[in-house]
Image (spheres, rainbow, N blue to C red):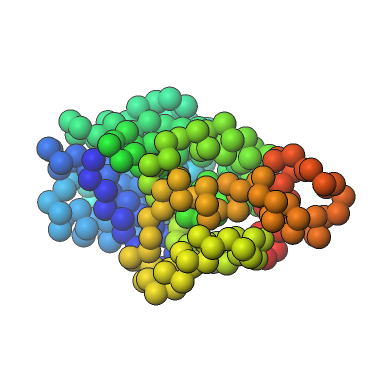
Length: 263
Ligand SMILES: [Zn+2]
Ligand SMILES: [Zn+2]
C-alpha cells in the first residue's frame, strides 16, 4: 500500500490522501477537496485515480468530487446513509465492507459515528496498518460534534473501535491540527512530557511535514485516550466539581469534548 499525504495549504487545513497499489498504479483519493492538487500528485507519481472516498458529508470533504470525477471518471464511495446528502455516490458503504484498490490494497470500512452520524474510517491492512479517519480522530485530538454529530456516539466509536486497533496503526486524519491539539493536551495535563516534547517538534515542522502519529503514540499524547489519567481527572474536577472523585471514562470524555469546544 502506497500512501501520499497531500497538504492542501487552505484555510481548513485539509489533508488529502492518495492510496495506491504499487503493482497497478490504481489509486483511491480520500476527501479530495483541492482536487487539482490530488490530480497533479497522482500524475507526478504515474498513478490513476479510479476511486474517491468521502469519509462524511461535510463540504470541506466532498467539495472536490465533481471536479475530480470530471477529470478522471473515478467512482465515488461514501457511507450509504450519507449518500443522498453528498449526491453522485456510486457505491454506498456499510460497516465491514471491503474496498480494493488495484491488486494489492485492501481497505476495511469502519462505521464510526460521532463527528457526524454517518462517518466512515478506512482501515488499511498492511505490515504498518493505516487509519484514514476523516474528522473522527485527529493527531492528538478528537473531532467536534456540533455539525450533525453526537459526543456520546463519538465516545462509543473510540472505545469500541479505535482503542482496539493495533498500536502500530498510523493515523491519517482529514485536517492538520497537531500543535493546537497538543496545546489542549498540555492545558489538561501539564505534566505530560511526551506531549510537550512532540509539541516542541511540531512547532518546528511545516504542516506538509507534520508528524504522522501512531495509535501507540496517541495513547501517550491525546487527551481523549487518557481518560484514566489522575492529572486529567483532577484538572477536570476543577472545571466540573459535580463529576465526583472517580468519574467514569464516558463522563471524562464528554467533559473533555465540552471543554475543547470552547477552548
Ligand atoms: Zn467534518
Ligand atoms: Zn473536516
